[in-house]
Image (cartoon, rainbow over all chains, first blue to last red):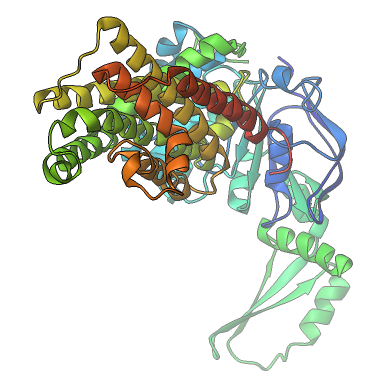
Length: 289
Length: 263
């Protein structure tokens, strides 16, 4: 099974450019695409899942072009969108069996549906209509539906949006488990926690372009520096001063402090992925402006 | 690579259009069975109309035997109104995301419409049967032979198919489920502008040609002639209307189907 995803020169404009000559190759593991609202994440996933045509460039899943051979490409991937796409009037089990039949599992569809309901802890709930499910149960059933066959690539567009932390952790566990089976997971998310928790590789999309690509540590290192955090217990406030981590810049930062200030505690903190994300997206906003 | 489950199938072959149509017909029939309220409305409304016209207005319109006059119109009102609900089912699939998933599967996703259309025709034939049984119970006495019954039911079935196809198309282009639902009212009023409830001669002269020639005009006349032997049966004109509407809907559906393009 070839779960390689190649994207080359991919562009799409609605009134304004949404994707701007995007190049990206993903071999395996969990890949997270981070970006603020409107960065082009959903458009990219829509193109990769054959729902929208790009203006130029190409994308291949396991060597199959999603634009010229959509039918063949659909055999290789599964996708779970932002809104769950389940049938409210059918039971959880009926949903899975129906999709299994459509995927070509034939009589094996019922067996596969039962196995997935078991695996996702939905076995008793599988007999109820989906209309009665909680948000977390819907997401898990939606995820199960994407695993009726073993897709080479699984697209998850913001899979935990709107879930409480407990449900979110369960979905995360499910995603980790399936990544171990060899499926390439392409995940879009707005939350840094999610990218850090799941992904081997994180890219940041900003206004249709990739502005960073690497592991969480690499992204943090790229932003660099250390942040001087000042805790003023007298005035009960926190101030922070950005430095580039060198002795000179630290000394400069320290010199701006008054040594006689009582109750001032100083700490050095490495930037978090949040800092990296904000730095990366802001820099490019300034460049654009 | 460890397998998540030993029987996990490796790849999705997908199925051909016939098989996917079969799966979608099963889905839509399940929807019909679960949606008891929808089914109740589809039957209750025509039955209420039937009782209202027979016992309240009927005496003022035709003093004697109004039930025989009005039943064909009520049957067609029932058929059309019930079939219009397909617009809601189709629109729900488009707006709530089911279509998005179907379109990423290795199948001809348009066959989801076949499921809605076939289920709607079956559902409406059942509703029509119930209305006919109620009519018989309150004194409807048709003179039709078995052959004429088949002829009449055939025309009704074609009309249901035509309206279903047209409203599947409306469901595709409607902006919301509520809007898709709203269009059904057109079909509720169409029969009033024909000989369904009142003789056309009682309408103003300028309105009479419209009432005679609108699609439901010849249909009402044909069903009435076949069931009760009253007047000529313009069966071919009715059939031509239904076939024309079906053909037009097919073209519109192909144009309106969501495909890979700008959303």
